[in-house]
Image (cartoon, rainbow, N blue to C red; front, side, top):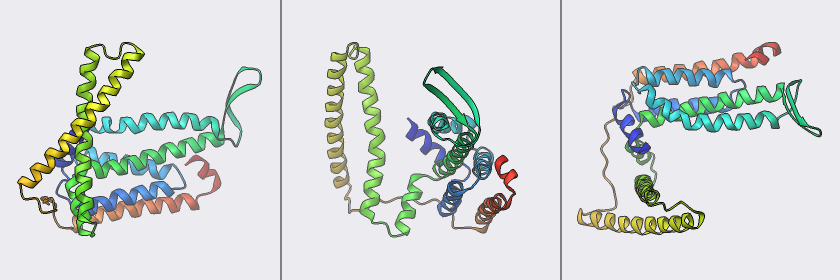
Length: 267
């Protein structure tokens, strides 16, 4: 399960004990800079540097990191390919006319826009994955408690997060059992099998929720889920590199804005 994979990585990486506020500051700061960057160079540099940090000092397995990036990469490439044919401006780079009255055209403006979108998505995705792969969810919940987020909301998020993957795993087991019994061989049987899967999943989820309530009551639940906080206090050793990196990205944005137009078209 992907949830087990991400939780395992977040619990075992070398940045596990770094204060979550520092990691949020670095990840969200990089995300915002990538969103407003005027050039693809800034998010590209941010994504490459944070990727090297995750694979290097954080000791994230490269194969695991590649699996996490694969989903956004496929979706982004498909979106950029479509965007190339929708955006105009500039000279024509490529044109294809399969028959009269219809043509597919890619212009220089579309290429620049596509590269910018591709680099922005790459930089923003890596920024978010930096938080996800280095910060366990329990640390995020503890951070929410420190900023006075209602405890009831945090507990509800914790239960929801857990049971999404339980329901997903249960649905996968039921679906595999139905496939082995040729439940999706014909359209009529597929509709019947899917309806049975939905009903069984609803009943199982309802029973699991009741079991959770009984288990909580038997353990004297008083309205708060206790959680262990293992993060170290905020230290300059981790804050200074984060501040310097964000300052470097902001400075790079300034350099790009002040660059001549000819350079801007390149970067």
